[in-house]
Length: 596
Ligand code: ADP
Ligand code: MG
Image (cartoon, rainbow, N blue to C red; front, side):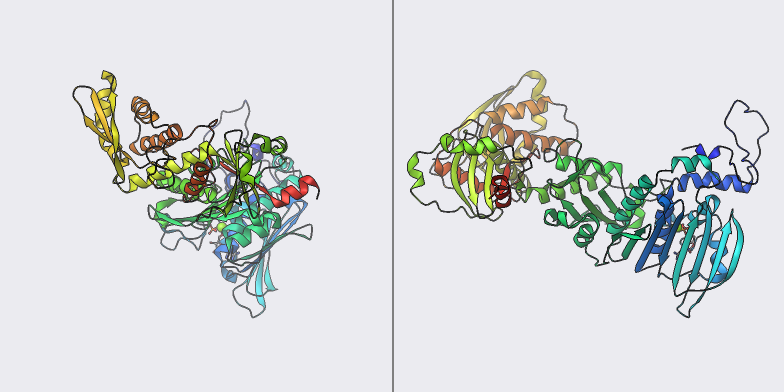
């Protein structure tokens, strides 16, 4: 909490009674009403943007279809919010400005709140720190009522021309609170804050037409299309349009999750444009932030954040909305489950598309070089290659291998570079996951069982995990004492089975089958933590360590099989750690770089 507004107010009628200083003695007493109101206002109304937030939320709660916001002098001169909502009855205008007066809790039950407001605090808090005028009508007969409060006292209360809806005007904000005034002095900063706030509200209320005018110039406008992608483009600009990826919506823990995010090529230094909308409320739940960030890990440079609007709809009683004075955060029951689901939804969405090459082009040298570095013999250039057609990748024609670690491919929309290790990792990982879903049914007997000898410290831990290994398709059999036999393993393409599904064996051995047992053992040795975490780590580790290594030369059938298998996975653009595995050098980039 800040205390700047406790400084003696220069031009108020009487200085505030509270002081922070050496003289702390004195009897305990109740604060005068006005002082108490100013203190309470400090929590809700910290700066001009807080006023705008409360007023626009009130307009949204009133069912407005059009909302216009006008700002002057960073909000200190004027904040005016005009809406076409249900309006306020003339006789209720004064009451609306009193503390704890609200029309939004008919059952006095905070667990059933469906509105953005619920405390009845905003208008009185604003009235405590500014001049406040409400003009409102509940029908379209042309006459409404106007009420002006100055220092909390009514100075105007009269009929006024007005169609249905409400206009709230706030002037002389913080004028009686010099410290707060000084803190809010930079018009630019306040305007930026207000702009940011309006963007958040706009993506939360996509079917409302919102307009923001700063010094009478249009700064932001949405069409009220009801479509989230459209709203994001209206709010963040046309340039992001081609990067927006809608999430496939999913149900989890009684909630519905969806949203639209940017591909990693669109990113910003702060988190301001990572917006979470929980039951229509734009918030920033800290607990979910980590899930979002981890989904982008490895895709974004350090300290950069995507554009994202994530939408969670859930029963009102699963959300505690009353934990933050300015209602900027909520507490979600089932936050963990939601975070996991959100992370998965994001990873799926991001994995589905190849990563466009980041500027500036760092591949200049590699691209001059690859022809000499190509692993293939020259005669491949004579035979036309068949394009590789897969469900999740565009048709790609294999050119060859570069530096024994990248595959170079050509598609209709440019060149593609594929990290061979990560591609294989992704293939194995998806296969393990599929196996787990099928309870390990897709396994096959190893030609030679593998002997597993356990140190005494690990023996009983290993025994405890046998079922979990079996669920992935690893069948271990006790062989007496601390020795086990691994008799069957999941069908892992390129590790325990050919990459292309045939069993001719030509591409059987690119993976590192020997790593399976040591990976199991090292995971057994780790602190076991939560079962789900442990399994996920096992999957990631197994895929990483058994996957084909960089530095290994591949023949053409193997390269093709690798691309084919990758294109069967639903997330072919990132590896299980979230690092990029496929880069796209677009036609447009080539044109720009070569200046064609
Ligand atoms: P809350 O929103 O928590 O109820 P406020 O102080 O923001 O508290 O508003 C008090 C009451 O004034 C609201 O409950 C509502 O009935 C009325 N009100 C405020 N703004 C509007 C508006 N723009 N349109 C209709 N009614 C409004
Ligand atoms: Mg309100």
